[in-house]
Length: 460
Image (cartoon, rainbow, N blue to C red; front, side, top):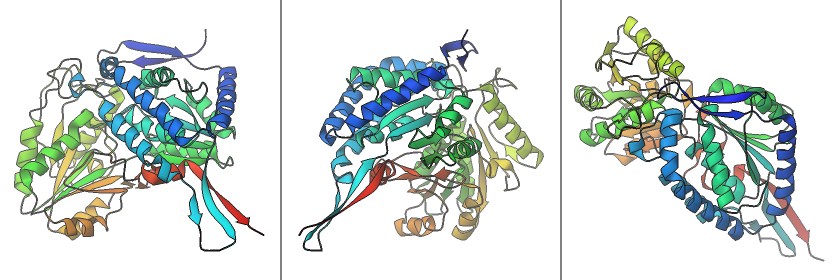
């Protein structure tokens, strides 16, 4: 019997889905189909490619009622939040809207007697290795612009969200996308690395752990394939003395605990100016205590289980380490199933924390957040930068100029003011330090999925 991938549901530990791992011959056929389909697709007008993406949107929207409970079973997100379709629509429609201009040749008209321009050529075959935490949004960031730019796409989805890959394939089939342009494959880690190292993939986009990113880089070494890597994060929030506290606290709490804290750009640490620290702590604790942790299929549940028990256990260890070093736990919510080896984990707010505790410097990716007091902007900046990661940072203030000034000094990919945990498709999505490299969405996202080609045509 062929090897399989089993999807263990965090709801009850049952096997929710099981799929056979692709045989080597299937992988070869997928590459052959992709190569053949892309040769024709690259010559297809952008308007026609966009039309297929519009049909894909119609199809994925029609599937959303089935997708929402599947997400709960696969990775634990409560059904009350309605899935990821809103973000899929926003990102796809935006990338469609800028495609003609972003992919148009760059004309150079300053030399009479010459026709000079730079075209944007598709790379070829794009491999998307997608994560489980936002299985549709993270994948769509590359899949849609890659196809619009004239590439073929092979998707290898996380084993925790196997069905998401199948839903993408179903939606593209419903849209009538030419066969071979999008293919969903089930691969082992070894097969994925072998595929990357084969030299037959032109671009790899990976969202996942730092160690996973290193393995991707090692596998791609010598192939000259381009890479997009979104890896770890430890996104800070800084509440200045002039912040609108009610608005800021409500937004920060949601940014910290939505999706059980399993958000790439979720708030993982909070710094509050000493003038407002006590009110921030009080407000964050008050709102956090209102979370209802339970079965994500229940409409009353506002926080489901983490995707796997080991992720919850890692948060328990991080919390215990902080408590040993003097931190104070402020929620202490009692859950019968919050115990070692269970994916169900109550949210926690820690105070008396410092940067000798991993909870303030290392990625948590779960429902725990620490709050520290700072005396001024300079101290906040120093602490925000004291982490190996840099995806987003949020500044909560009424002073736009000051937010920009602070943001200019923070080592991060995106600076927010009075907002967090959001991806604007008009602004490039990128990170610094161990968060990775490359960029998605916006015009820059298209540039990373194409290669420049110069035309220098002399008239005689």
